[in-house]
Length: 85
Image (cartoon, rainbow, N blue to C red):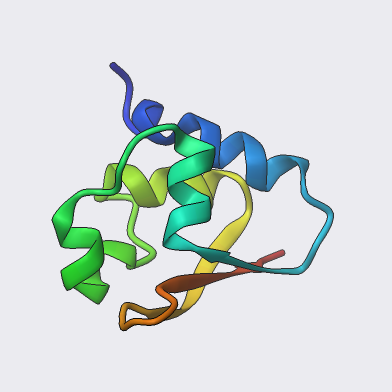
C-alpha cells in the first residue's frame, strides 16, 4: 500500500470540493473513508498535523488542503481544512 492510500477517499472528497474552507465532523470523515478513525485521532491533535511524514496527512496535503483547527471535544468533534495555493 502506498503512502496515503488508506485515506484516498478523503483525498478524493477534498479534491472534488471547490470550497476554500471545509469543516467536517469526525463522524462525517468516518462516513467518507468508510472506517473508524484510530483512537489517536480522537486523543491527539498532533494526529491532524500537516506533515508528509504522517500517511493520513498525505491525503489532505496532496488534495491541496491543510488542517487549521481541531476540536476533539464533545459534543462535536470536527476538523477544519483550509485550501492552500
